[in-house]
Image 1 (cartoon, rainbow, N blue to C red):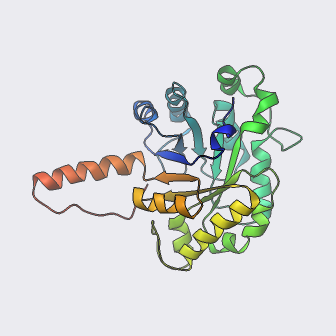
Image 2 (spheres, rainbow, N blue to C red; image 1 turned 45 degrees about the vertical axis):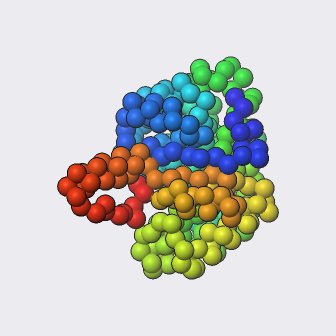
Image 3 (cartoon, rainbow, N blue to C red; image 1 turned 30 degrees about the vertical axis):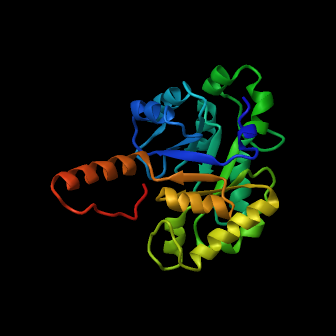
Length: 258
């Protein structure tokens, strides 16, 4: 179980799994992504569908992440016990919320995670308990004006692995409506600021994007964990393009990435 070494001097390209299907998870795991994230918040996944999806992903060397529905200890610990090596928690708006979140991800003395890693111990070995605190990733989602205003306090939380920016909710928080691949301030300035602050703290900076061009731009400004679209969006965009081309229509654009 040596996952954190994969982040050393390397950018992580993350795929997003919103469709509850193990065959899609298996197919995505063969495509060269560095990590795959099962989305339990806005995706259609639940605990039972995630079991087979994680089993499919484990056939590769890809790092399995989960975005949980909320900052709640039960589901966070269950997904770690199931074999996820990284947890992305939505709507972290304060230092206290971040401290609680991080504590759910790690065993004592680093946190308050309860012991019972049934599948995790099965696939990572009997020494899982001794190694997991060093290998588990905890990503706090920054996606509101309140969170941006509290960013220094949030980044000061001990054992936090990194930040994952949610652009759509951040844009909504500033009255812009949900958008991705944002170039307008104040959100664009916030995105650049968060990357810089993560670098200063030696933390991972992650962000969700809607295109490869914007993802590459994020890598240039300091993000080292980037997600592009989702399985659902990739499938529907490609399918729509095929239909439009066959019917001689212009391709339709969409700001949505989920």
